[in-house]
Length: 397
Image (cartoon, rainbow, N blue to C red; front, side):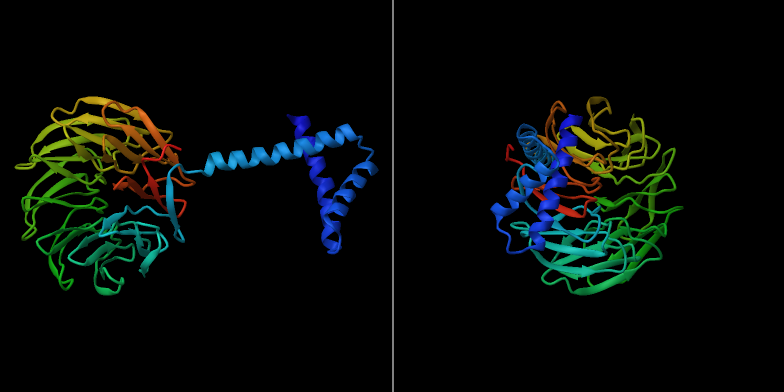
């Protein structure tokens, strides 16, 4: 292999010299270029067998290079990809044939799900890690410029913006024409969707990266003070709080009056929604940033210990786990019996929901924080390689 590499380098040097002569004399024909290359080889006293071996080796290196490039950069089933100007940690939201997503290039994007063409983009003054939501013709999304934005769905024009005192990393949710969102200033905000006026705010004891969810008029959210809060959505008064053993950056999900949420103390918790009492907890080996995904009787969630876990909804027992090549911040999405989730190892994984066996994986060039969405057999997600991907999950190669 070393011998082939050396003679390939030799061939490249000879070819380069001849190629320079070709460019210095623009009227030199291609057959004269080849003759020049052969003459240079003769000057170096290279016999014809060695010369042919050099050419073959050079062809081999070129083919190998393109095979490697294909292996690393080919995405099976790729329908389209859209490049932003920085990393994409935000997760997509799809409404009426349009995909909405943020980027660390400070923009919120609206793209056609058909071909990825940009409908509009809106510039904020900070990175957009928050994930957009759409309600009644308005796109709501936070930014690290300390604002929550309300944009017209048709053209991305600004309707209003609400100023917090620090980053709005949290993703908003809507309930009864009120927008709820957390901020790094440690507050949970309730903002009137019509005009951006403040309805109420509730102060926790630390930053909020967690995104709220609402069930039966009660808002649930985690805080980096280590607690999970249940607040009445109408006035922001505290119903209960549940304290874990470390920071809570995961976002909650509520199912059958049970709140499921991860903590940086390495546990996934099941908490009674009615009174905040403990039901069970599942222990992994590292931090839970990922948000629980619930399908049938199973919770699917990623962990910083590199594993995807499938956990019994009723008692917290382990059904299966799958190890990826690095930590997981992305949250899972279940579609047609397949669990889709991204990893720091740059792959988007497709796992069999019943047993966790690998079905397929899709390589990107960057780590994947973005959580996937699948609609009509198309997988959408962003990557730290600055690209938003649309992949046909039915494609086999």
